[in-house]
Amino acid sequence: MHTSRSENDPRVTAAQLIPTCQLCDAAFVPQRIRLLGESGHAQLLHAQCPHCHTGMVLLVLIHELGMGSVGLVTDLSEGDVVRLFRESSISTDDVLAISSHLHTGELLDSI
Ligand SMILES: [Zn+2]
Image (tube, rainbow, N blue to C red; front, side):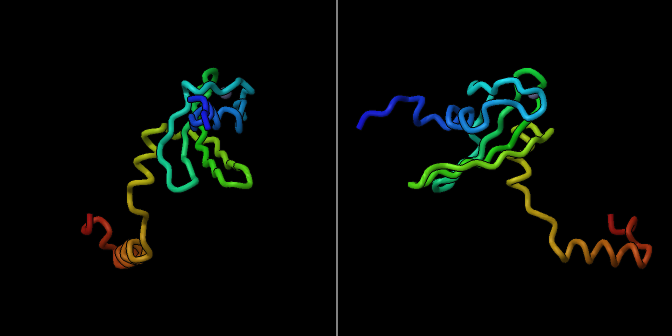
């Protein structure tokens, strides 16, 4: 079966799922959408409004029953999104250590 290039382009799919900016209603264009990662049937994309430059992080899920998406308006750049996904999260131990240092007044000594 032959498929055109645009049918397989996740940027085109994202622009179809979220056609306009949530803030200014300008149309998203595939040229301003970047695929940041994919795993199985899930794709993570970042779109930037060509008019107001607002960012949107978009999670697209594609499966045999169809496709769905969740979008989040953000001020994060695509580089910020990639960096935050790669960094480890704050653990419970980290929070307890800071709390302990706050109670003993040793916070500045531990930095
Ligand atoms: Zn906009």
